[in-house]
Image 1 (spheres, one colour):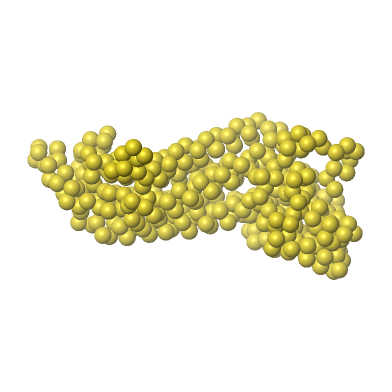
Image 2: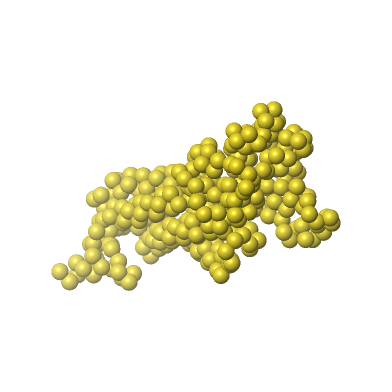
Length: 364
């Protein structure tokens, strides 16, 4: 077990301070899957018997189907809690071998990489829906004239569809950036162990293949201590949410009484507690603030890794919350923007009127 060397139990306040259990809930599934692949490899390498492997996999499958049965309150992290659960279900002779040639250092990076892979796919699927919605609304509004602005002043005359397609192109670039990041995320660190690998014969490529990775991270120090791929991913999310923030700001301005170009659906607005006639663009306003939160998460992560020595440091534990938080915020914000785009009402006559009396026409 992890605390095999210290004789004294962690004090409760120290355990609470060190614990990452709350942040680990999002990677519990991936820790189980990673442990299954690692155990299969250990069996194939002759370190675990068929009977022991069956017991380990049975316990892990139970944990996967009923994660609430895993006791977490007395452990520092989910890795320790799952190992204790497996030992409890399968016995020390079998379950105690599950952690052979593995450390929490390579284990946690593996879990996060697998989760981010799924996050990227889910975010890109949501992006695809949003882009499709923008294109569909653009087709509906090809003949709707609309003023274009520089410095928020009337400039040339275009169409509403031209605006919508500009958003679609920006979001497509965001999707391209995500899949470029996916390539660097999709490399397995498992087998790097704490920092220098293991003297026990293992097959890193086999576990990488079982878990769907394109390749392995060849250098063990790099595998356990580098977080640049996570920083790149969060940076991409910050750029993506800034695109969403710009779209939100445009819709907020255009939905005001002074502009009146679009009207937001009541199902995606809020009213005032004192002035019930108002239709406040609260989801769009929160989109702007979510952009700031994702950007601040990136800054926090950069601050954590700045000037850390090579090798694993416990500081890296605190990357989990801003990283996973940024994924969740981005996905939810994309979905909300998709609902707003598909449901907004376009005031075509108001746009035509504004275009017909524009500064450009007055001087031509």
